[in-house]
Picture 1 (cartoon, rainbow, N blue to C red):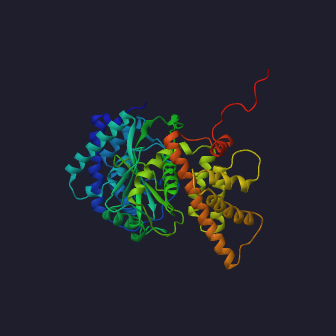
Picture 2: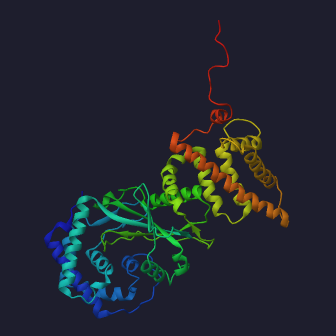
Length: 447
């Protein structure tokens, strides 16, 4: 493990003095450019990349004022021989070059604009506290990160502020001040989020422990699994669970990251939405909250083989705008769920197996519904254009019905899984539903 300069009293004292000088320089320069600038690329662009919120030119001018001070030169010299390359544990986003001491100072000041105007003594005091936090995190080998993904067009029941998920995450309402801040944050960006969009959104939030270390330059292959990818999987898991419980057109808008130590010279970026449309608000009923949580628990177990295809295809079908695409997605899910891996006539087997999911009563009606969906599906895959108004209406009805049948089938499997474990939906499973369990060999033993 590399040296930890943030546990060195001389280093932290010099750091706090340089932070005070940086704030003083910024006060003298003032806010020269308040608008967002195009982020420059190439050598020397690191500071500009971090500090566009306050103004690129302001930061450049402030850096010139203090970077040649005696204190800054001393801090640079002290950190030259130490391993001061910060690496955060995610494979796509980490600082991949050696950081100078001035980068650390500027990042710390940029993270807290309240430092401007609070006096040198207070700045130095807060900077020492920052060094203490960084030193502790480096010794521990991890730093807390909060991942927040905004889910569009979803509303929680009245009186329920958040839903706790079994893996430590939570779905929560956005607060009014949070909505205002997010709308202003994106106001100057193309495709930014409006107050109306944010008022019809919830947050999927996780608090994570992310690996962090100072590493030698020759150890740049040091890697950890991507926290970006992990969060995307959590979002997909939640949307799959939601699809199984109720119809929806909810979608992830963006994911943002808040690092537990304010001022680290690293940015995890923000994964923004790609063309999320206003497709109607989905209301979660009070009775559905418990069902969503229970289904969320089951989704990882369902994400294997044909069950995984079925749940993913239902979520995909709900997002489709073209009814033909929606129908085909849903039928693929139904085929994965209801068709055992053997030869036979597809329409008959799918319709019969869907009927058999009902323990009693309405099996013929269930069979006929599935058969009607598959009839339209077969017309599509064999080239029918479905262009007349009557055909379009039939296609729309079939697409909605296909999603409803797939959701009903998945709910039945989830209910069975909670009581008996996740089933293997093979030929034997469906024969047992139809004929009952095996009673022994059909052939007598040879003499």
